[in-house]
Image (cartoon, rainbow, N blue to C red):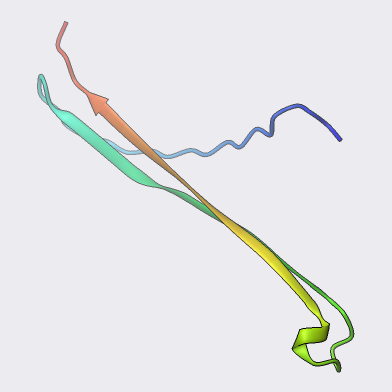
Length: 69
């Protein structure tokens, strides 16, 4: 097993006009991951089979605060 972290790179582009002390909220970089595993013969009843699964959702929210220097 590799113990180094996984690098996930996502990118977005937008153009906004902002004044001093404005706050800008950018959202929309969502990612859903999931997997499902079934074990056992398909002709067996459900209680004799094994079904497992999980899902994760990641959302990036970027908040920018504008301050004139």
